[in-house]
Structures are given as structure tokens and as C-alpha cells.
Image (cartoon, rainbow, N blue to C red; front, top):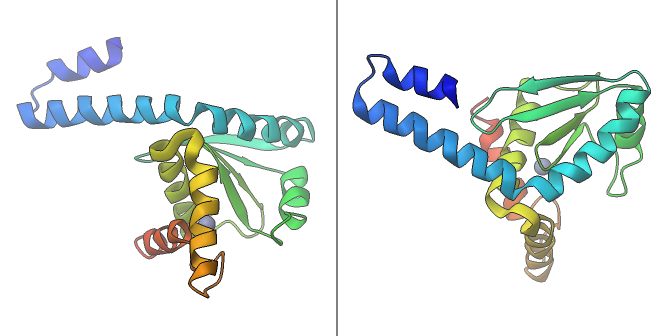
Length: 157
Ligand SMILES: [Zn+2]
């Protein structure tokens, strides 16, 4: 909080200060709103870290913890929906060490942003979007609106 106050005393235009304050508040609210999901992500991160994994903070518009390691690779290879390069669970991104690219990270950060918007409802909304795609005769994953939006974000990586 003091860091923010010090920053607001700097000679920034008023609209920039308000925008910074608003985006910090929005980020904090998103972190709190998605906390139930993030706790699930942290539960997955514990065995990854215990198996010698690495963790770092990704300071993006919607921040996230990036977790990788041998056990992350194992989990992603055996994901129930098929082998994956990465997955986001709340504000935790679990990534395969070999295949993480800026595009994949951007894709997962889009899911982190979606989780911050939907909070604990996100898994239900995601499943509903898959169901909606199937009802239209399309693919549950590729035509899921959340995946379509994340792939769109990838193009700006
Ligand atoms: Zn995705």
C-alpha cells in the first residue's frame, strides 16, 4: 500500500494515477475472486515444487505464478483431456518445461484473466461453453468461447 501511495505522489498526470489505482484494485479483486481456483492450482503446485520444480511470478496485466518441473511435465502429459503444454488453474499456470513459448504463456494468461473475471464460476462457465459448442455440432475444446478468446490473445504475443 505504501508503494502505491509513493507512486501516486510522483508527477504523473491525474488520469494515469487513477488508471493505475483502478487497475491495481481490479487486479486485487480478481485475485480474491479467483482465490478458490488459485488454491486448487497451489495444491497442484506443491508436489511439483517438492519434486524439484521451479516457480516464478509473471508480472502481466493479470499476474500469475508459473510453475514447472518434472512432475508438472508428468501431470500435463496425463491430463484427462489429453496431453497439454500448459494449463491455468486460477492464478497458477502449470507449464511443460520443453514446450512453453511466449504464445502458450499468453494463451494461459488469457485463461488467468478469464478466471479473474469469473472467479469460482469459471469451471462451470467453461464447461457450459463446451456444452454450447457441442450443441452447435462443433468441437468442445476448439470451439469453446474461452479457448477461442485465448487463441485470439496468443496472436498478440
Ligand atoms: Zn486454453
